[in-house]
Image (cartoon, rainbow, N blue to C red):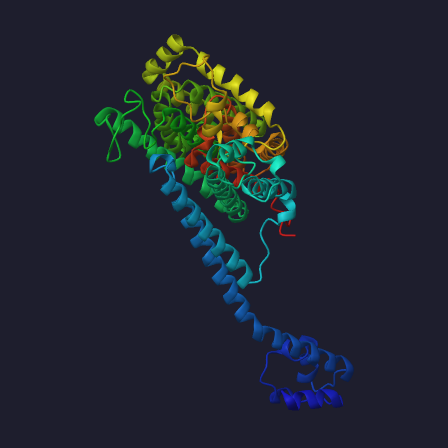
Amino acid sequence: MRMLATQCKAGKPTPARQFQFAPSQIGGANAMTELRHGGSPNSTSFAADCSANASVAVGKMTRPSAGFGAKYAARVDEVVFIAFLLALAWTPFWFGSNRPLAWGVNAVGFGALALLYEVSLFATLRRHPVAPRRIWFPALAFAAVCVWSLIQVGSFIPTGYQHPIWQMARDALGVDLPGSISVNRDATIVALSRFVTCGLVFWLALQLCREATRARRLARAIAVIAGLYATYGILGFFLFPHTILWFDKVDYVDSVTSSFINRNSYATYAGLGLMATLAVAASLYLHRGGLQTAGFGRKMAHFIALTIGPGGLWIGCAFIVAVALILTGSRGGFFATLGGLFSFLLLAGVRGRNNAVSLGFGLLMVGLAIGAAFFNFGDFLADRLTTNGLASDDRLAVYSLTWLSIADAPLLGFGDGTFQGIFPMYRDNTIDFLNSWDKAHNSYLELLQGLGVPLALLLLAAIVLLFGRCVLAALTRRHSIAAPLAASAATVIVGLHAFVDFSMQIQAVALTWVALLGAGTAQSWSSKIATDR
């Protein structure tokens, strides 16, 4: 190499027999042709070719390490993604993760996955697949809620901004207790940890599912997980109705609750699983049910083959999940899922206008499966609807009293997650004294009461923005629509059910929903757009 460089500088060509390199490495095919015929190539261009190809050779020497880094990064991403799916499968297992120990396990587990993913990005000098600036407003809202929750529990707040209950405690006990905006600092810290866990799940889904294949896998995984829990719930309902896992079942013995305690919470989870199943099925019929130029008979033959094959699996899964949902007897869960189903059909119908035959028949088959489930197992739900109606007087009274509490602290709130401590201060004889209320059965009211109106509205606006991105993607993306479709319909379900119950405060429901929302948001940009900057 040193001799070659010296001769290049001198402008002297060297016979071809002295080279041990390929032609492309020593000056190009034209120079070698001249050498073979005894000619003398232009010394200036030959020297330039030598210099350029020497640089290429040096560059090639460094590429193996880059390739190793990329291979390592891909493996780490895949490990994190698989662990992420397994963690989502775990969340419904122990009473829908509605236990303090389960909250801690989820926080540590998803936190460790997020840390591993971020360390992998840093070690391999990669950018985030979705740059934070792409979701700057939701990120700002998330950070603002976290900071505000910490301020609510801080004892450094001036006495005039602290809740009066702390001064009452000082007067009663004669002790200078530290006060805060939150009436229960421990409850607010727990609520903050649960909120951060939701943020980590969204972040992981957003980054990992920017790759379209992973977004589809996530939707399929949630559909399968929901199908397995639905199967367990149906078998338990008929074979061991007085048992949940290895515990005695005390409440809702006449309803399917799967591994959840509350039938309404499980109904919402089943609704999310049903939307994921429908989205996977619709995506399948849209992308494999083409043949736009074929005749009707050929289209039908193709549709039948698709239904007997992979489509039948998702139709069967939808039937099982729908049966479990109906057997819960949850009025709110049922009607919220109907709202999600209507929005799904609307989006899929508009989206599939160019492939209406295959998609239409596919959705018809799924609709028949859901209808068959209701026809055969809907007696209990219908009886509850006709006997109890859609609302209870006590619940309406709780809503009214919660509004009164919000009006007393509209800006600062009472501390996130403190409803159980606040409500007894406002409870009156409009509510049956035998009933216990640790939840408002309206997540929006609890959010307004806990965080205060400004921060609550900021958070809701961020969610609406993400929902809008998913809806737009479900309508306009050519490919990879399963995640945006599932996320859009799932958001409708949790949004509607949050008006009448507290399912969003059950981690299995919340984490599954934000995972779908993250995947849907990740696929809301075209694959042609570089979202890493």
